[in-house]
Image (cartoon, rainbow, N blue to C red; front, top):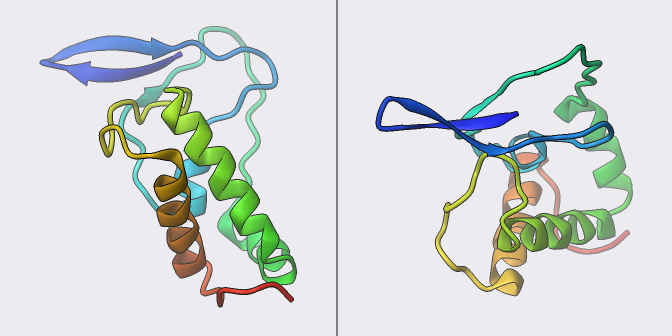
Length: 114
């Protein structure tokens, strides 16, 4: 379950199922998580650290655009876990550009495709 604090009260904003994921925005852009993830049943959680993604993104710059487009679409549809309401109603294309710039900055990547 993903929840946020709303005036001192925990408010559930999303419930994840097997195979769902969270935290992608943080690992890809460095943006903080705005809420809490709580397992309601036994769960296996895998962490993919920034260091594991860095060589993939450096080798395949097009992946930055693919990931930023996906993040922008999820955020625009209100499906990015625990960050609902951030950045208002930003157009998905502009949001994807901003997310791609954040990914490039965080991973120290140059714009372009190898």
